[in-house]
Length: 207
Image 1: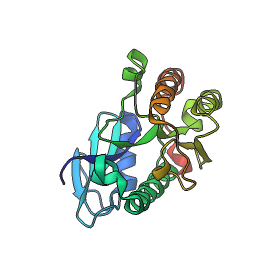
Image 2: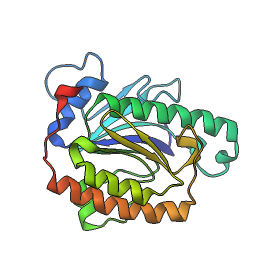
Image 3: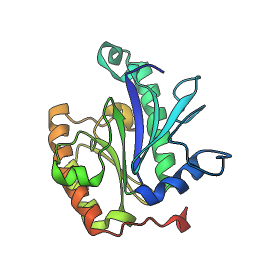
Image 4: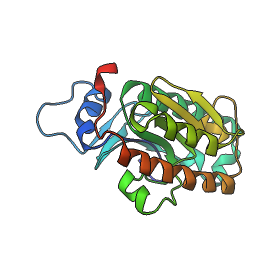
C-alpha cells in the first residue's frame, strides 16, 4: 500500500493488545505477538491486503486513504461510499473489542493518553469513539456537549460514536474543519484526564 493512509485506531492499553488481536485476527499464531500483519479485509476498502499494526497501546487497522485527500475528495460518490464502509467497519470493531477510545484518521496517528495530557492539541477527536465503560459517563457526556449539536452522535454498545465529517456518518453531518479542530483539542483534554483517573484495565467479559 502507498500513502496517504486511512487508519482506524483504537487505544486499548498494553494489557488490551493481545485480546484485541485475538478478536480481530483469525487463527492468530501462538507465541510472540506480531507487531504488524498484512491481511485481507482489515478495513475492507481495497481488494489487496491491508494492515493491522500495534503501536504501544494502540491497535491500528490501515488501508489506502487517497480517496479522502486533496482533489480526490471531489469525487463525491466514491468518497461517500468508501467513507460509509470505513464508518461501518469502525463501529463494528468498537462493538467487538473493548477500548478506551478510538478514531477514524487520515494521515494522522492516534495519541496515547499520556501524550494528550501533555499537549491536547490533537486532531484525532473529529470522528471518534469514547467508551463510557472505561472513561466514565461524566467524561463522555462532557465530550458529547463539546462535539456540538451539529455533529453526528450515535450510541453504541459500550459508548458513543461522534462524527464531524460527512463521509464518516450515515446522516452526512458536517462541521467546519477549523471548528472541528478546536473541538477536537477540547475533547482530547477531557479524554487524557479521564483515562488517567479511570481504571487501567478493560473488561473483556462483555465482548
